[in-house]
Image (cartoon, rainbow, N blue to C red; front, side, top):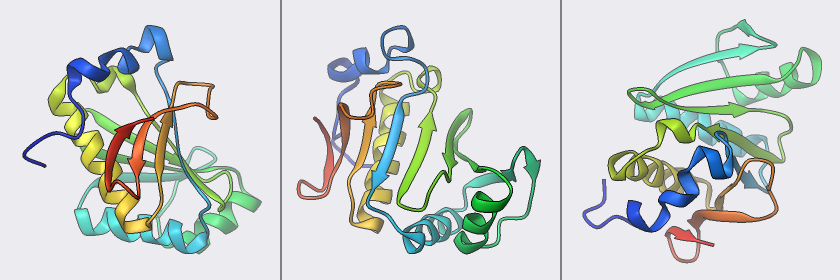
Amino acid sequence: MSAVPDLLWDDVKVLFDPEVNGALPDVVVEGTALEDWQVLLDLLREQGWQYAYSVGGEPMELTSAADMAVAAYADGVPELRVCLALDMLVIFRMYRTESIDFDVDLRELQGQERLDVLVDFFCLLGRRLGKSVLMSAEGSPDHPDLGFDVDADRVVLM
């Protein structure tokens, strides 16, 4: 965790109000390819995060991004539930390989400590992929509120 937070809770708490922005904001990394999904899988294994993988609601073994893509086109939407901290999930869904889409639950992201975990995750993912990670209010993906900015190398308000 960084010594000085990229974002202060008091400055952004309105963005994390489920009543205002919906409980599940849209988070996306655009301009990805299958290789980027594999980088994500490698990252979660490196970090030792607990995860559960399913396709069409059926639990499965997570082997590779290529297998996820095959399942996405044949069997339904692959879902990867990753536990970043106690009671704090990130849920990835492979709708297509050209973007990495995921949800966080704002009800699990209250306070500076939880915000710091999310910011650290955005930074880790964005740096590893060399791409922006953008979070928008639920249902407003074209208007990001905050995200990892590659050029600034940190999470910023948009």
